[in-house]
Length: 191
Image (cartoon, rainbow, N blue to C red; front, side, top):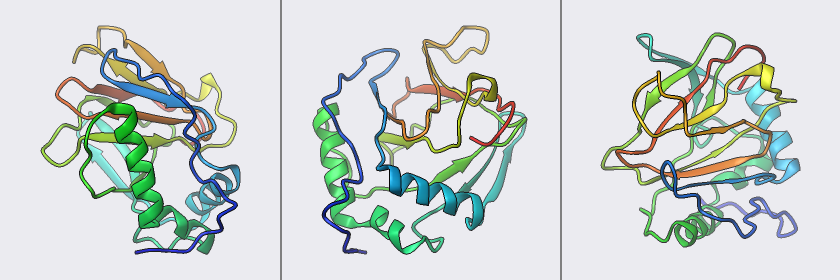
């Protein structure tokens, strides 16, 4: 689906970035999503999104929604613009120096107090890379819900990197057998 969006809105901010090699190729970009789009998307997620609850034994509890099929606000239709998504994918390809599959999937996840996601990798034959955009209202360290990058699939071993879910921060990483990550327990607020 192609949508027309105002040319004056730069949706994604891709400044020069340094790809971090450990524990697996990844990067972070603060202020990645346009402020107006981020504010509108956060309002939609808080007030109109139809969240589905998931629980996988004691491993993970979270909610998700697919913004492509969930009736976004008109301003947000630009997020599913084929040209815009192709430009974003091209930039990710350039940074990671890889060829991506042509399809870009879009899912929003939400965690509430008490929820977390255990150490895992999303590796399968379909996905090669993930780009996460954090949206929230005033996250602090006391909120929890930190993205953790791991060298080992062992909760007793401290994570290699902690990536706080700062509002409008993007995190991109390869999906491979070694892309182990988790989300620490949310203590308050929503992540």
